[in-house]
Length: 151
Image (cartoon, rainbow, N blue to C red; front, side, top):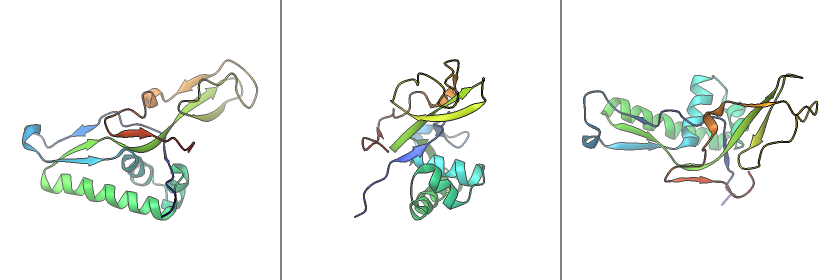
């Protein structure tokens, strides 16, 4: 068995539960879409990346990406066609935090859980900011696990 690679995710979903209109949630079967499956759909179907490019962004093989996107698309189709609820949670993921330096216009990522950088890696300026704050709180959720293997 190949060693497990942690999936890198740039953006946690803002909305984590979807259901057909007019049917109480308690009456619906729920399908779980993992956060890495959500990320695969975002990269391939929304942003239009080829599988190889998207796999590289997620730090996984192209074949693994193909398996993830296939599973995600099947779950989404099942929910749409068969009127099921879709809940997004879980998966072994590593979130990235994004930073921007207005002085030199440099953008860079830092792994979640490493603390705030002291300065911009390009120009050394301490006047930089975090962007895309939707990533805060990543790794949370009943079934989500942060990767312990360093990515």
